[in-house]
Amino acid sequence: MSGRIEGKVALIMGAGSVGPGWGNGRAMAVRFAEEGAKIFGVDRDPERMVETVDRVRALGGEIETAYCDVTQSQSIADAVAACVKRFGRIDILVNNVGGSAAGGPVEMSEEIFDSQVDTNLKSVFLTCKYVLPIMEAQGSGAIINMASTSATRWTGSAQVAYAATKAGVIQLSKVVAIQYAKKGIRVNTVVPGQLHTPMVEVRLAGQRSGGDVAKLLEQRQSRIPLPFMGDGRDTANAALYLASDEARFVTGTEIVVDGGMSVRCG
Image 1: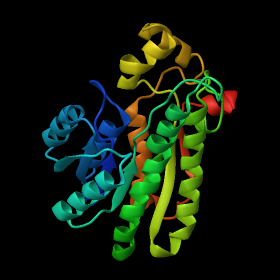
Image 2 (image 1 turned 135 degrees about the horizontal axis):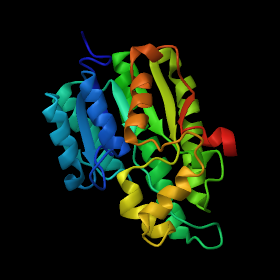
Image 3 (image 1 turned 30 degrees about the vertical axis):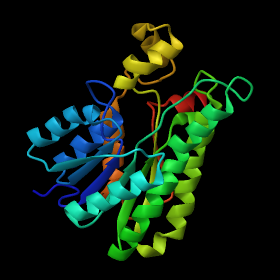
Image 4 (image 1 turned 135 degrees about the vertical axis):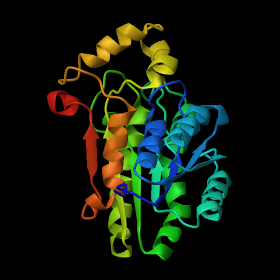
């Protein structure tokens, strides 16, 4: 039986992970490979890609990697060109790069706000700039952008730039989806909630609970109606659906992956 995205080429921005386990990018690379896709994974830190590559190849999947700094236009252009040179096309684009910074307008510096815009929002604009002409020439393509429940609700701390930029990702996706619908290109957004990914241990616990991972996990779980916390594999399954032909009539919308948190607290 063929996989759900058999033979398709997936360019995944941020396919590494800051630590062992199921970050969103790694999980999507592995899940897509399980369903027959060829993976072109990029990250700004090659070390973050090692486990991703090992997991994909252990499945017998095909993966190539490249360095990319998504805040730099030329770096994105080079990564897109490398993907096309290696595989000849791009069927699926996943924009998975992002990060949060604490603070509201008064506490946050202009430099951090600008950096958040570049990393979380402008990066999506730039990847679309370079990938859309390729998909348009093909007459098909699926773009999946990663937002966050912070884009639509208060999630426990002031992070004004992250919330604003992730809200921007959702609206950017809608606009591009309608602009390119007649070209056979679908654009959708996955909106993850408070998942247990390697980012929790590596970065968030230090920011929000004095390094106490268990305390942070307890705080996050308390907001989730389901009796467990999801991880990157849940994000990957949502993205897989949107990338596949099963979602052929789905564009300009979002799938929320948060265990009911937005319904309970939104």
